[in-house]
Amino acid sequence: MFGLTLIAVLAIMGGAIAYFGDKVGTKIGKKKLSMFGLRPKHTSIIVAIATGILITASTLTILTITSRDVRTALFGMDKLKNELSVLSSEVTNKNQELEANRLLLMEKEREYVDLMGRVDAALTQLSTLENELARTIEQRDRTMEALASAQHDYQTASGDLIKAKSDISSLQTIKGDLDLKIADLSTARDGLKQDVDRLSDVTAKLRSSMVYLREGTVLYRANEVLATTVINVAPQEIQNELMRSILETNHRILVRMGKPDSDLEALWISQVDFQNTLKMLENSEPNVVIRIVADGNTVLGEPVIAHFEIYPNRQIFNSGEIVASKTINIMRNADNMEVVLQFLQEVNDLAISKGVLPDPLQGTVGTINIAQLYDTVNQIKKMSGMIELSAVASEDTSVAGPLKIHIQINKN
Image (cartoon, rainbow, N blue to C red; front, side, top):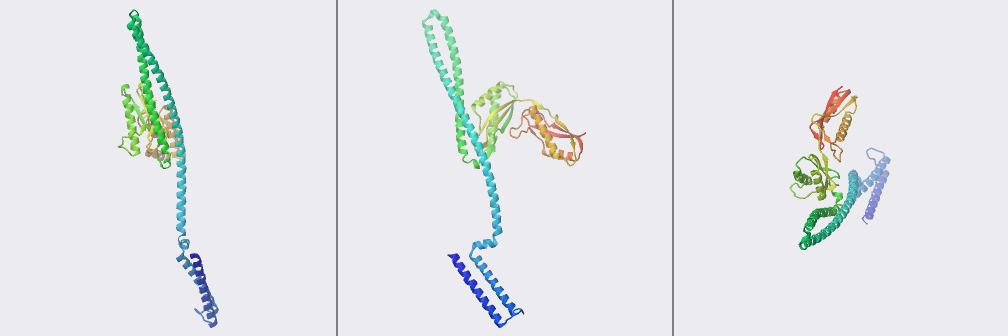
C-alpha cells in the first residue's frame, strides 16, 4: 500500500512540476523574456531542462528519504560488496574445516572398528582361559579325591606303606603344580578382565567422543612416540624402572592436556602387555631401549592407549666421528639449500640403516642447529668447484638417539 501511495505522490508531483515548467516556458515565450542575455527561445529551452532536472532530483530525493533499499543502492553498495567478499571467504574456510573434520571422523570410526575387534579377541581369550581354569579345577578336585583315597589306603594298609607314601608324595607334587597353574591362570584371567573392562570404557568414550569430534583437538597421533627410556639396571630393579617411565609419561600427558597437578590416569597400557614386557626385559640383555607408543589418534580429554616397544641398545656413533661425507661440484647460482638438505637426508638414511631409531611419524633420527644450517648454505654460496661436506657427530649416539651433528666444509 505504501508503494502505491509513493508512486501516486511521485506521479502527481512530477506532473505538477512539468505543468508548472510548461506554463513558465509558455509565458516566457509569449512575453519574449530573456535570461542571462539569451534569446527567448533559448531561455524557454533552459526552463524546460531545469524542469526535467527538478523532476529527477525531487524523485530521487523522495525515494532516498522514504526507502532504505534506495539509500543502500546509492550509498552503501561498496560496503555490501566488501561484506559479501568477507562472508564468502568465511564460508570457504568453514567448508575446509568441515572437510578436515569429516576425514578425522572417518579415521576415528576406523579406530572404533579396530578397537571392537580387539575387545572381541580379548573376550574370546578370556572365555578360553575360563574353560581351561574350569578343567584344571576339576582335575585338581579329582586329584584331591585320589589323595584322600591314598591317605585312607595309607591308614588302612600298613603293609603297603612305602608304596602309599610314594603315591602321596607324587599326588602332592601334582597338586602343587596344579595349584601354581591355577594361580597363573587366575592371574591371567583377572588381567584379561581388567583389559576388557578398560577397553569397554574406552569404547564407550569413543562412541561419545564421535559426537563432539568436529570440535575436538587431536592430542596424539597413531604411532607417535610418547617416551623413550634406556633401561640398564639389575633384574630386580626392572619393574621399578618400568613403572617410573610410565608415571613420568603419564605426567607429561597431563601437562600437555593442561592438567599438570592432576592425578588422573591419562596413560593406559594393558596389564598383559606390561607383564609380557617385564618378562622380556628380565630375560634379555640389561641394556635396552623402551619406547611407549600411542596405539591410535587421541582427542583432547580422552586417555592415551599405548603399548611398549623394546630394542637392544648399543652405541652407534662416537662424539667427533664422521657420520657421512660427500664430494659435491658447486655451481654458481645453484640452489645451495637443496644441496645441503639432500645431504642431510642421506645422513638420516645412513643413521637409520646403522640402527638409530627414527621417529615413526617423521622418519627422522636427529637434529641440526638451524643457525649452522644457514651458515653452511652461506659458506657454500661463496665457493665454486669441488667441495667435501662432512657430517660430524656432536656427541655419543646410541640406538635411542637422537643424532646431533654439525657440518664441516673442506675445499678440494
